[in-house]
Length: 257
Image 1 (cartoon, rainbow, N blue to C red):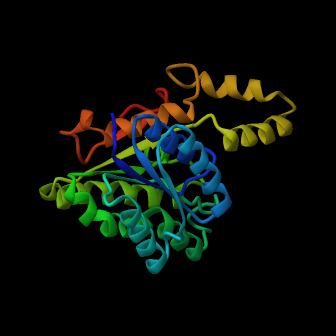
Image 2: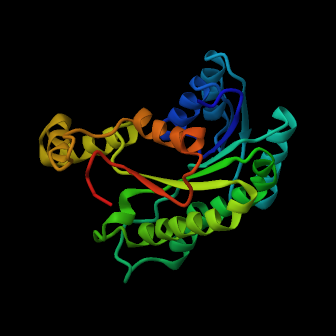
């Protein structure tokens, strides 16, 4: 599906970022891994290489202009092309009411969730245009609800959705598609840890918490990282060659849109 393409993934960690990188490699792509933690992306790079594809791990602060520019240079120098960009990095501001939130925390959330995604997309656009490439923004189901304490996070993710739609219009004439994937719960280590803390507070098991949450989803289960990653791959691939400006919700039916 992505044979001999080059895919750049930002914010690569042990959860969704890793799954996107590995699924891209399994689909035939070489992968550029960007994150602040060098040891983490080096480990995932070895996993990518074990699939038979090439990997480049580039320690990057995507909120910094020079560091982001260095990522673009490293990717193009190593592979000579870039076909796809996945803006996967995110930051969750402190979960407090908007009436109490620190504006510095709101700004920090926007730096990672919005400005960094714009920065990388702008920097990679010339390379993407050469091969009629694709960009996917990783958003969140937070844009589908207005639960208390999530206001600051929703502000930045709503802005990211608007950014993706506007970029789709601006970059379309260059042949670049820009889409969004909005996951809900992802059954990975971070969520398992959170459910563990919740279970301890309530004196129940993690499975009890899982079953309680899963019962609110149409499919009766939580999505796995690879399932979200496969949706990303669809939007990166020629299978979605006429799709741009779209948001694909991957939440097992938690919200309908």
